[in-house]
Image (cartoon, rainbow, N blue to C red; front, side):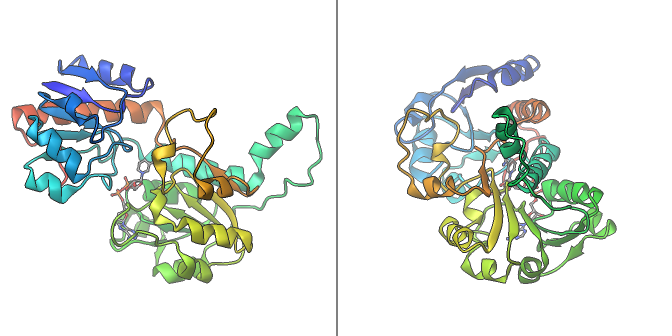
Length: 329
Ligand code: NAI
C-alpha cells in the first residue's frame, strides 16, 4: 500500500525501513508536518502515517479524505491530537500503537526524579568547571517517601513497580484501578487525597476532557509544600501558568516535564531562534525545573515496536483483518 509518512525524523527512517522488509509497502517519507498546507502531498495515498505533532483537525482530515486517504496510521500511543468525530464523519479509520515500551517512559520518569532530587545535571557542569563544592547539591532519600501516580495503565503500573523497588509507598488515582498494582499493594484514593499525601506526583494518564488541567490552582493548593511533580503524560494535564505561580511561591519544590502544552516548539533545532513563548521562557529560569523535549519514549526497543506495529496496522487494514489497533470512533 502507498503510505505518506509525515513528520519523518531521521532517527525513525531506519526503523521503518527495516520493519517494511516483511511488509513491502511503498513508503514515501515527508519531513513536513501535516497541516492544511501540506495535506495535498498525500493526494492519492490510501494511507497516511502521522506523529504526535501533526495536525489532524477536521479541515486537514477533510482534505485527506477528499484526496483518497482512508487510513490514518498514528506512530504514537496518544491520540488527543486527532479530531475523532471528524474522522468518523469522513469514514476514516484511525489506528495507533497502543503499547510499544511502557518501560521507556516509566524509566525516563524515574530519571527525571533522580536528576531533580540529586541534581546530577548541575553536578556534571560543576565538576567540569573543577568546582567540587557540594553546597547546592543536597537531595533526599527516596526510600520511605510517598509517590502518587495519576493513571496506572501500562506505563503507570511499570513506574509503580520501579518506585516500590526504591522502598517508596505508592498510592494512585485512576478511575479503573489496575489489578497488578492492587496485588502489589498500591493504595487507590481520590485525586485530592493523592495530592495531599504525596511527596512526588507523577502523571501517566491520557489527555482527555476529564484530565485537562487536572493539576491546577485548586489541586496544587492541596499538595505538600516542596512536592515534586513529574509529567511525562501530556503537557495540558498541567495548567502551566498555575504551576509557574506555585514554583514562584515555593509550593512546588521540583518540576520535571517531558511534555508541554505548546509542543510545536519540540522536535526541531531552534537554537538560533528567539523563543516567543514567554511561559516556556519563564519555566526555563527556575533552577528546580527540568524540561526535556518529549523524549521519554525514545529507546531502540520503542522505535522498533512503533515501526513494526504501525506497518502491521497498515497491512492489517489492507487485508481487512482484525489485527489492527484501531481507535473506536
Ligand atoms: P494506558 O491507556 O495503558 O493507561 C492510562 C491510564 O490512565 C488508564 O488506566 C486509565 O484508566 C487512566 N486514566 C484515564 N483518564 C484518567 C484520569 N482523568 N485520571 C486518572 N487516570 C486516568 O496508557 P499508557 O500506555 O500507560 O500511556 C499513558 C499516557 O502516557 C499516554 O496517554 C500518553 O499521553 C503518554 N505517553 C507519553 C510518552 C512520552 O514520550 N512522553 C510516550 C507514550 C505515552
